[in-house]
Amino acid sequence: MSTQAVNTKEYRQRWWTLLVIAISVLIVVLDSTIVNIALPTLQREMDTTLSELQWIISAYIMVFGSFMLTTGALGDRWGRKRMLQAGIITFAGASAVAAFASSGGLLILWRAIMGIGGAMILPATLAILTNVFPKEERGKAIGVWAGLNGIGIALGPIIGGLIIDKLNWNWIFLINLPIAAVALIAGYFLVPNSRDPNPKRIDIPGTILSAAALASLSYGLIEGGKSGWEKPQVVATLIIAVVLITIFILWERHTSHPVIEISFFKIRRFSAGVSGVCLMALAMIGVSFGLTLYMQFIQQYTALETGIRFVPLAIGIFIGSGSSDKVVSQFGTTKVMVTGFLGTAIMGVLASFWEVNTSYWIIGLVLFGLGLFLGYIAAPATTAVMSSLSEARAGIGSAMNTVGRMISGSIGVAIIGSILSTVYGSSFKEAASAISILPSELVETASDSVGVAVTVASQLPAEIGDTLTTLARQSFMDGWQVTALITCGISIIGALAMLKFMPPKPV
Image (cartoon, rainbow, N blue to C red):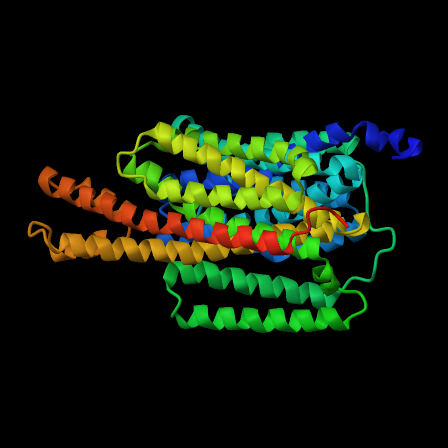
């Protein structure tokens, strides 16, 4: 690195910049987990329907994913600091209004606007780090960034549980305001602005096509997982998504100023990095999707107790991500990511042996190991993506990295959630058919999900209620075993893919 670069203000305060970025990311990550804990309270106090509850979560995810490519490209052109601060203001403003929403419909609207704010924040943070840190430190900085993401994932359920227990649901949104204020004020002084020095004209058709395609895909995946894949609106939406994606790709290859340069995917390290992120998201969903259900309905922990028990996962992610750069410098990206995927596969197998009464120390060890190996995938994959592109294109690179993870996660939730539900329902009905004291109507209702079964059982006489609860919990474990083994299978595919396609070092 040149003496001139070392003497710049941006270089001297780069670690302070990372701290501000971490606070900014914390807002987005906290919100993605904290609201889940409050859903039962929202249903009781706002009289929301089940569909409204689902869309309070889904509207945020759908809008977030739909606008990511657009905001990443605009940040490269307009300035990443400006995009970051505008995103924080949008997110905080929508949070303030959402805290006082009087109906489920209004809350869904403001959650969607929060999704726009999140889509402005996240790509900008990673792009800023890429510009502030020199290449030799970039892997370490991205590792810390990824590790702090893991800390946020664990803090969400804990803070959410504390808020629900001690305050009221409004504070799950109001808590964003002081964090946003700190990020805005500190960011004004400590985050430098950067942009593409030679910006191309805005690709308006490509921008519209990408947002519409991702919105259609997200909606189809979310609705398919909830309502069934055979529903006409689900099939139609997914077909529309495929058509729009095809048109988008054709347009991007044709235009002289694309949102995404398709040539990026000719870079092996970039393509392998994006693939690694996508496969990691799919693998992680296999265990994490049912984990909250397992903790609350099988192990019978409260919301706060469940949140606290996610801490080993977060610590594992933080250690794995934080140490990955040093390990990569010794052994290369390929070996580290292959180790991460193989380790995740082993954790999936171990999780498949959990039972209704498995001791938490066993669960905690598996969660720590899962987090550690996920950290060995997430940080090196992200570094591979970002190091493959010029600093001028860092915003769109960051957006593509995040979009890949989110879409893969949505696919995983939809498909694996459907598998878990199917196995649970089939196992429950088969076991219940042999017990004469359970009325057929009760069996049909309880076969919907373990949550419904446990809730219904609590309102029945002890003999029937205990029998119903026992059957439901064991049936859930049958489904859990399948999803944990799916995690193992996806992870093995990930290991083989990285072994074949990921270059060990940047070229």
